[in-house]
Image 1: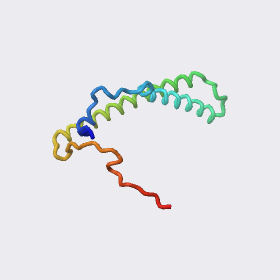
Image 2: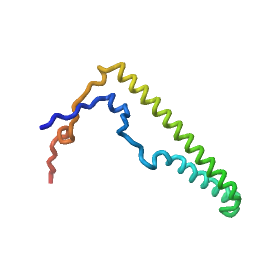
Image 3: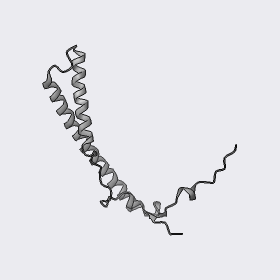
Image 4: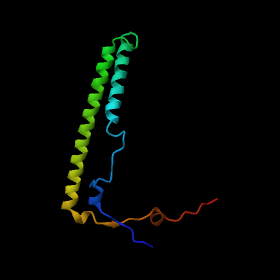
Length: 118
């Protein structure tokens, strides 16, 4: 039996370039914001009992504002997550005794054997 690789807590919090974002990841929030902005423009027209696509400039403006807001929220979220990871990484570096390196286990080693009762 081969030795299992060691599970290091600091390695979990470090991106060494092996986790690449998907194609949709950087554009998901701006697209979702643009769709929401367009939907808001439709909803405003519905609320004022106008035809759905009247005032197309409002649709364009709400769509652009929604896309910008989605990009802003995405950037703020990335900054928050980077700061959180840095704080966690620093804490783990200061308290290595609380986070020992452990051997990885498979589910078969952790779970008890199960016998169905029929």
